[in-house]
Length: 405
View 1 (tube, rainbow, N blue to C red):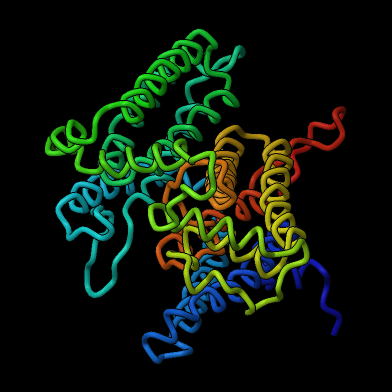
View 2: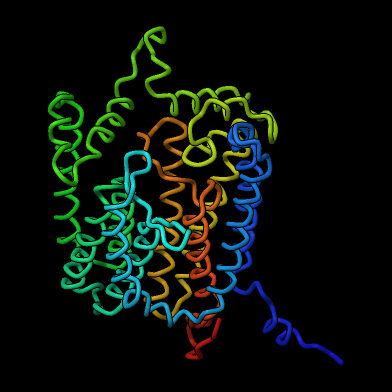
């Protein structure tokens, strides 16, 4: 009995773009190796030496299973995302505001023994909603002016609920939405006005956080919704007020950035080898927010560049898939998701190497975490679904045949 190639394709678990699958597998391998190394201090304190890596590996397996399931869904069904997840995102974000604080912020919702961050779900929901608006409200010149108003209305609601507890996530999501509007052809007059207002607002906020006396900051932080103001102020000032004389530098004042820089500086270019990190024992959140510093310390500059290369490949490969899509919605959707993943990765890396203030953003698909790992795998599943099921433009301009991916 001869089994045709088409029959094999139908039973394949891993369909869609093979390059993106390879990027995902490489990120998972790096994640398991580096999270296990970076969690050694936690293992030593608890006595459960295998618990951190087994827990993280289970999240990755669930994430891979999620990717496989989601990428089997036809891309046309992703238009249902806003109907279900906008109300769910709003409700869970409101509930999160009244939960117990972790690291001075209420970002988690727990139900049935399972906890998750609503902001992770809200980001993808906002991107999917923006993709629908940009694809449905357009003409020959691009997006219609009313599309901008609808998008900004959703941004105000979703990002407005995220800001009080997680400013960096809200700001990053807003940046991705702006990039999507630029790609979607929103009129320059509207985008220009928005960017002008943002520039003025950022300059005003920076000046306020930089120069306002600490006692005034403390008083203002008593206003509901501004309780994180001292944290934001401290991060801006710690990043910009480095003393010129190294003898005056207080290592205890900003231990995360300090030990991250030590980890990178002591890698000697080629790294100390997997599992041989020293700074993991001194660097807070070495397995999460600052894992990129541990990657460089152990794998060297080559390892750091390789991780960066994987995210760049993801972005350009997604752009190629989007460029081949016949319809606008799947193209805008996957570009938004790829931009979100890569932007978050670049911000995390910039923080680890000391060129950006501390934000608390994990490195997607590498940092230790449950909610972020599983949901980011779902986002990759969406990209793979589009690469598998979206209609393509004809490869021959003279042909009118629609080829199914």
